[in-house]
Image (cartoon, rainbow, N blue to C red; front, side):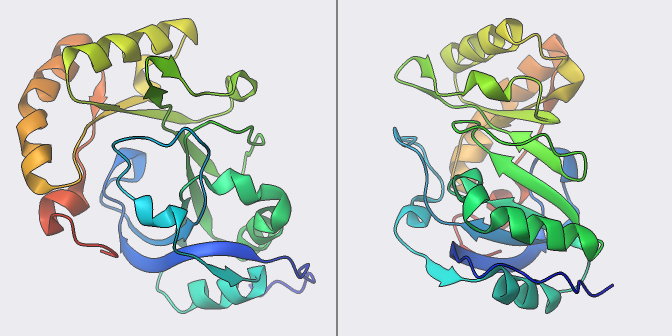
Length: 220
């Protein structure tokens, strides 16, 4: 269904738009079109897998983004970053409303560093970040995410994760744990111990299918 609602002429910082399979989390293996928005919140993650989203972006209106998304198959969109909710009041809210009217299923990937709205018409996957021993998570987001996805690579990161889970009383069925790694070799090195940890503690493990398949290649 075409959306006849006029869009405001805000513009968003767009790093890339591409079609792929979702490689991690609750939509694992599902075809989707990815909208990566530029910009993030300091302090940046030392292990960031998309540092180019801090520097590379093109200004696009919500209408132009919609036109680009319409050129790809399917009606699943993953909005990621950077930190996408930095741009909620600068065009993303308008884009969201039009995507819903056009029948898209929407998944947001966020760090939780900035407040995000309650969204009954989208799936929010929050990946809290522990940087220099401190969780960079806005408490205003408590209870707003549908799922939580943690990056882990050693016993210390797993212990910190369990502390966060206990603090916010997260049900285990809403938690995914993913091995740290922006290359295939890194992923494989961390997968076996993480597999055993998730098996023994009742968490869901998610790989990164795109990294395992294409290594460090972008836009796949």
